Amino acid sequence: MKLLASPSSSGVLTFICAVSMTVSVYSTADDIQFPKTIAWSAYPTGTGGYSQAVAIGNILQRQYSTNLRVIPGRNDVSRLATLRAERVHFSAGGSESVYAQEGILNFASKIWGPQPVRAMLSNYSDACSFTFATAADANIMSIADMKGKRMTFVQGAPSLNNATAALLAYANLSWDDVIPVEVGGYNASIDAVLNDRADAAGGACNSPPFLRIEASPRGLRWPELPHDDAEAVARVRAKLPWYVPHIAVEGPTIGENGIQVFSSAYPFLVTLEDADEVLVYNMVKVMMEHFEEYKENAPGANGWAIGRQKFDQAFVPYHPGAIRYFKEIGVWKDTAESRNQANLRRQLILQDAWQTFLLAAPEDYRAFEEGWLRAREAALGAEGLITLGEGL
Image (tube, rainbow, N blue to C red):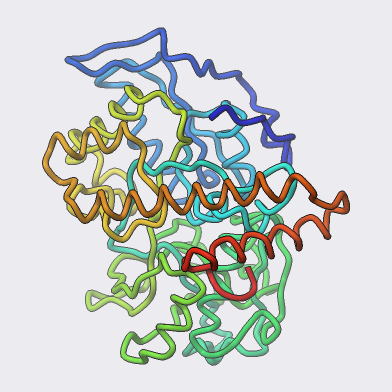
């Protein structure tokens, strides 16, 4: 499927150097072939995802004479806009890939709609993909204590903001129960806590910017989300079914016994369905075969291990190039194939619903998005599929 390039979002497409997306010019090593330059979009510089991409890039340069250009995107749309516009080959982000597949939140607009996202690899690290980092002096001991506190709201980042809503639901809270503090990006949310404009920000447990909060006069505290409260866990997963209860043992101030949180794949390496199969296969193969060489070179990089891939719990279908490698090494089982076929079917239902909706869609942008969300929910409901709950 050939997708139209989206317009620039927050300047992300003012990309300092054009990257050729052709795979006809290769560098080689053994049986691996790569173009001279591969481009990823990722979270901003200083984050765990960006640092991991750099570590993997060092392997590509040293072993295959291939440059990995990492393009930081400050929000969900910017990271995927470069992918759809064919300015990067792959995107190493988070839940925004699921939201793009679903055509919801920022991807419910006329220029987006449900996207044919394909998974390549997931990182389930010893840290966590998203939880609340709070200033110790705000005295937030539990999620219930978030009521009335100042929580960062990252503009253009529905994956972060909706994850916040899901974790607040653990204590039967919502955005209406906290004081939203709007910030322009992920790093700006950390600055807001440091500058006493906010009391809490969300992110990965081992995200390097949280070290700044720990070292500040305000200090750092992680409120836990105990897993023995079944109803609270169910409220979180009703909003984010790809989030699972998790013990995080990596991150500033976290002791050896860890903390009870939730987690999902972060980074989540994805591409689109029409990505070159050989390139996808080779990227996955290199990341797995050189895992021991980079796993200690960036926070959370150990989460890329093949044994931590959760094929039978995936919510996005895998690219054939990735599946080819997984089959070769014997880890793609019947349960993985069954789940993948179900995810492909979900995408087809969503994309068919989108095309049908466009035939008589309203011109007004607000009416368009509201109408699409109703049409989307009806299409999924008719097939007995989860719609991702209220508020999406």
